[in-house]
Image (tube, rainbow, N blue to C red; front, side, top):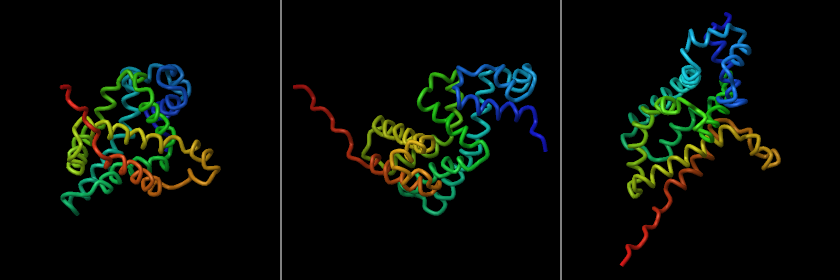
Length: 214
């Protein structure tokens, strides 16, 4: 079956946004690559910002549904799961995305979101796609790390997401760094490396508080 005009536009936009960035990619470039009329973007998405939102929603909505299902299954087995199991439920669905058609392009685009968020005019609405995942996972992670102040926990989770984004998008650098000894692992093995690394960071001693001035 031939892809619909809407899906042709989404595929082209995802590929071009990942390669050149959102700001550097015009609507005309997207429609030219997709082989559709220029007006099709406005018809299907309303604007370029609407197109950006749709590109992310197409991938992130099923991804986060998978994460939430993994968390629900985990909580059914154990009402208070440990940190490593929570991290696996968060990481593995995202890491498996590389095996999907077009998944590599989207992971590159997701990496751009982490490294240059100001390039996304609809950043707030893109981040909102993660809203339910944040609402469900953060209380569980907080429970596992009660010694951390809220701001300290948020910093560590922010760095955790950066580590995950790097693991998903910079495998070529890893292959170069390791002379080919690493970088071709599957999602489960990559998740294992991430869990060991970020788990140690998340469990680290709380930041020392400055002595009050006398």
